Length: 594
Ligand code: AMP
Image 1 (cartoon, rainbow, N blue to C red):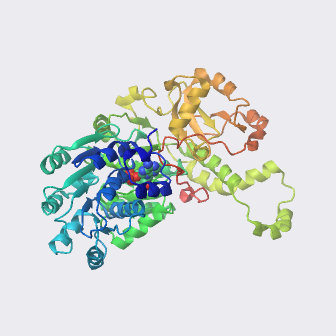
Image 2: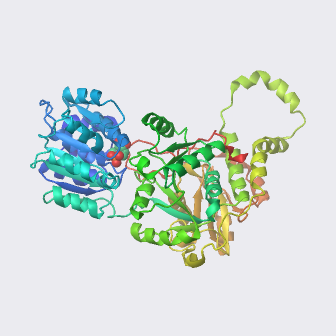
C-alpha cells in the first residue's frame, strides 16, 4: 500500500498529515502529487468531490511555494463561498508547520475591505470565488500578476454557474508562464475548451470513470401523479427515519414553498436559495451541518459546492432541465467511498428523461414504489421500538418512580410495552392508515423489464418475491451494498437473488424469490455473528405486522446481542480514523405523524 512518505512530500507536510490522521493517500492524491512535485506542468484531473482532491493540489502547492516571500504565488478558484472557506481551512491545516505561509479566502457576502486588508498583510495563497476575485482585481485590491500556480477547482460547476467570462478575465491577469491545475468531476465541452484555451499539454489523470456519477450511489425513481409530489416526498422521508438529505427543486419559489410546507408539517427542514441573504444562508447551512436540519431544500445554484459529508439521500423533487445537473445533484451523496441514494420523483411524462440520464451516468435507475401508509407505519414502529431501547435513562425520574409505579400498577410487561409504543405510534397510524396509494397507476408500463434484474438494489417486490425484515441496519455499519454482500455471502446466493435492500437505522428489509424462503429462514435460525443474533423474518408484503410471532418469542434472546458488531459499511472509505455516520437523529420526533 502506498504511503504518503513515498510521494515526495517534505517533513512539515508529513507531520501535518499525520496530525490529520490521514493514513494512506487517496487515488487522486497518489496519482497527482508525485507528478506535480516532480514536474512543472499543467494538469487536468477528473475527480469527484469527496475524493481528497483538495490535498491532491494543496500538498504540492504548499511545498512549492516560497513561504519567505510575501508575494501571492498560488491562486485557487472555486465555485462557492462554502467551498472556498473549506479549501482555505484545509490548506491552513496542511501548512500548520510551515512558518510564514499565509492562505487567505476571498468570497462574496463578506467585507471586501477586511479581505483586502488580509491580502495586504501578505498571502502566498489566495482561495477565491470568481465573482469576488474579479471585483478585487478591478479595484486593485489583489495582485495575481506573479502567480506560479493556478488551480481551477470544480471547473464544471464554475462553468455551470456562468463564471466562464469571469474566469477568462481573471486568467488574463495572470502570467502566461504559470502552471494551471484543473480539477473537475466531469468533462463537458465547456471545460474541455477551457483546458484547450488556457493550458499547455496538460497531464491528464482520471479517478474512477469519466463522466460517470459516483458508483456508490444507487439511483431510484418513483412515479407519481403530478399533484402527489409533495405527499410522496413526505412519505419518502417518513420511510427513512434517519434521513439527512438535500431536496432539489427547480425554482426558488418551489424551494421556498416546499421547505415551508415541510416545516409546517413538522419536519426539520430548511430552504437554501438565491433570494435569501447571506446571513440567512449561513444560518441554514450551519444548522444543516449540525444535522439540526435533516432536509435541506435547495436550488441547484445555491447547493453548488455544498460539501457536507454523510448525506444519506438526494431527493430530486423535480428533475433538472440539464442532465449534467443531475450528476452534480447526486454527487452530493455517496461521498468518500460511502454509499448514498439519489431518489427522483417523476410524473409519467417525465420518465423518458430517466432513460437519458441513465445513458449519461452509465448506471441504471431502479423503479421503486412510494411506500404505502402501512409500510411506513411498520418502519416507524420498529424505529420507535429501537429508540426506546437506545434511550438513555434520565436519573431525575428516580424520585418519582414510586408514584409512577403506583399509577402503572397491575400492567404486565407486554401490556406496558404495547401502551408505551402506542403513545406515539397511534398518532402516526391514524395519519397513515387511511391514506391511499400514491403510485401512479401506469406504474412501470414500459419499464417492467427493469424489475429486479441487473440493478444493484433490485426493484419493488415483484410477484413471487418475499420481503424480509432483518434486525441489523446502518447502526451496525451496514449500507444497502454491504448488507446485500453480507446476505449473498451468508446465503451463498447469486447477486440477483437478493434485491430491494433497504437499510434503516437499526433494521433493514430485503427481497428474495419465494423459492428461497425456507432456506433463508432456516439459515438465520439461531444465527450469530460475533455473539450477536441476526434475526430474519418475513415482512408482510407490502405492509402489516411481521409474521412469525412464535419465532419472535423463541428469540427473546435478541436483546442479548453485544452491540459490538460492526461490519465495514464504511470500510471502503479512505478517511483514516474518521468514522462515517448517517446523520441520524434518533431521538427526534418525526412530526409527520400528526
Ligand atoms: P476533498 O475531496 O478534498 O473535499 O476531501 C474530502 C475529505 O476527505 C476532507 O474532509 C479531507 O480532510 C479528507 N481527506 C482527504 N485526503 C484524505 C486521506 N488521504 N485520508 C483520509 N481523509 C482524507
